[in-house]
Image (cartoon, rainbow, N blue to C red; front, side, top):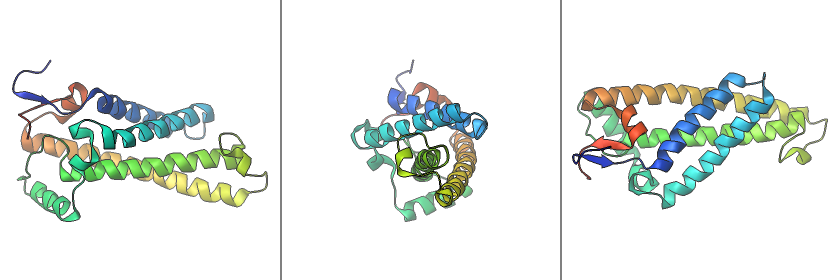
Amino acid sequence: MANSSQTRVWDPLVIFFHWSLVSAFVITYITEDDFLTIHSWAGYLILALLVIRIIWGFIGTRYARFSNFVYSRKNIMQFLKDTLRFKAKRYLGHNPAGGAMVILLMISLLITSITGVFLLGAEEHIGPVAHWFTQTESFWSNALEEVHEFFANFTLFLVFIHVAGVLVESLIHKENLVSSMLTGFKPGKTE
């Protein structure tokens, strides 16, 4: 439980979303072509989580709303410059770079998930869009597979940058950001 000098920043839905998304992404990435059923269901879970999170980004709690963490390009660039000098301002919610990363990850995961649904329909002729494809549409299958794999790998690249950013920010501000994503609380009062 948090003491009086801590503020609830991440609500239970955001925490559940974050760690469920991490788990589902790991499952989809390691199962790839070898375990198609598990891969597909984990992909559907990612898509469902993203839809819920997008809705929550408009109607959710203060720090969950997009309006709280979507910044201008100028603010993001300034924050990154300040971070490189280890003088970045501390934010109770997502900082400008963290907010940009959330959006990039969501877009990349949406493209990966949607192309996965279409790829399943085109290649395996199963899933919600299978009826759109015939047995002879290998062009779509090849094109979808390329896009799907590119964005899966791009998402992994973004995850590494995200984790590095969390570690750097934790060092700069001497706080455990991973712990706050587990408990929901961060040191400090509401901004």
